[in-house]
Amino acid sequence: MKNNKQKQSLLEQLKKLPIIESACQKSGVARATFYRWKQKDKDFAKLADEAIAEGACLINDMAEGQLLAAIRDRNLTAILFWLRNNHEKYRSRVELSGRVEHLQKRELTPEEKKLIEKSLRLAMPKDETKELNNGIDNSQAYDRSNSSQL
Image (cartoon, rainbow, N blue to C red; front, side):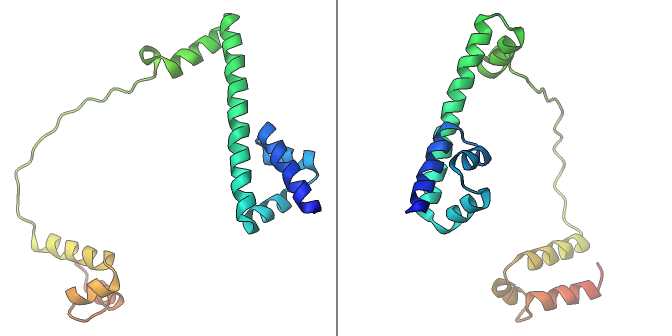
């Protein structure tokens, strides 16, 4: 019963302030206990995640209110912050320029073909690689290809 009351208290604290350390201190629960509960009790974990999300929304609303108050007080930093994050004209931009050249197709050299084949063998799961290697497994193919350098 004591654990249930502590869990409830902790969840309520997280809804007010979504900082685990602070919520644990205010509800008298060790931080390690919170994580242990979260790991062992899936229902608690879900409720804790929901409480943290609800608390984050509350803090976001408070911060937005403070930002708007700062804008009303003609705080230039607040004004610029708002415009950069909410108005297309003031957003930071990155301009890219360049030239694309289309190279003519060419045949791969035998060495390039071997290298690609080796790479594909190493990247494939063992059962698919056996078909390619006629029954040699991936590690054997790797050992064999390492002994003969391309």
